[in-house]
Image 1 (cartoon, rainbow over the protein chains, first blue to last red):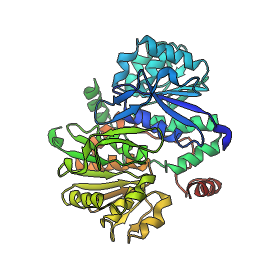
Image 2 (cartoon, rainbow over the protein chains, first blue to last red; image 1 turned 90 degrees about the horizontal axis):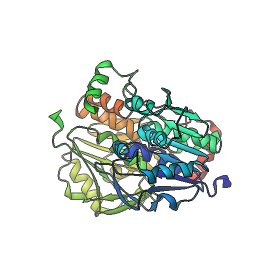
Image 3 (tube, each protein chain N blue to C red; image 1 turned 180 degrees about the horizontal axis):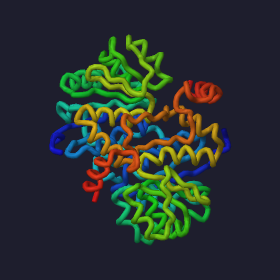
Image 4 (tube, rainbow over the protein chains, first blue to last red; image 1 turned 120 degrees about the horizontal axis):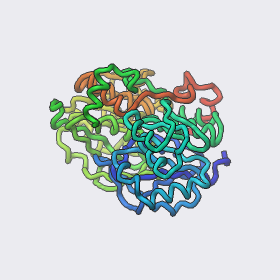
Length: 212
Length: 212
């Protein structure tokens, strides 16, 4: 499967990223034969999710030239980056030559702040919809949304679905299926509470109070 | 939600662990109010998944006394640990006082090597079933299996389902549902290829050749 030789996939890391936002797609992409996945950050170093997870990032933003894919994970730290010129410039620059520019969860806000989602169909975590709309984004209530070469996904766990979909487009459905089987991605959540539409109303109300 | 005060959850890390095996349950557990999640390893330090991910582990095995939950993630590195006396002793010791002793994917092999799965119903990654059976385990083809206070889960992504189930037992279904909604765990895989039974036969055959 040499078609992926030199395919460079970059996942952006920052303090207070959400662990699964980054590691879900990372797990999927790291199974592509011959592709290279890189974590990048403003500076090399150790970055924390704000809780227990600390990961080592070896590369600064511009060190990986012309990545084929960039992924912006969400997290509570995203809000403090929305006016960071260095990051916004990097997103705009890399987007010029990516095959796909992608986000998970509230990561979409950073794509929007960089001006990439103007009049674009996109999605985000259900609790970030109003915030994303302020950037002139046409927010769609879907698991992931593919518009042009931008692919955004819903909250946290949705990055796994998005990454598999992206592989079917970067390569073919067969490779996506092989990777899905290798990670036994046959989800069987014990409850039906994964979206505000499906969860019991009481659960939605409790959570809205907690995360405000 | 003070019921969780002082609940200690430990995730065991080692070189060549599978990223999502550890981070899937971690993401779920880290959302329990007032619980503490710890990564532990033989020694504090940086541990790699064998690819791009390197995580910082701050605690050695016995530093977290009497954890309420231990989770053993799978990974290609697991095979080199199956006769490691220090790790096996730690598993047996902590298991005496855990509320739940759990594994994801090939992590079940380490529980089995410690003697915890003898005549116990358990599961693992579909490709590790024969290996697990050699320990006298009654291997069950399910997403996760709860037998006594041992909960094992199938390959890689199954740890997310298992962790949500475990929270419903440690606490109640309501908290599990709140956490599921907070991480928007409403999985919609783009393909139906997550298990050997569901995947196209051709896909299963290709993958079996690759991972042997």
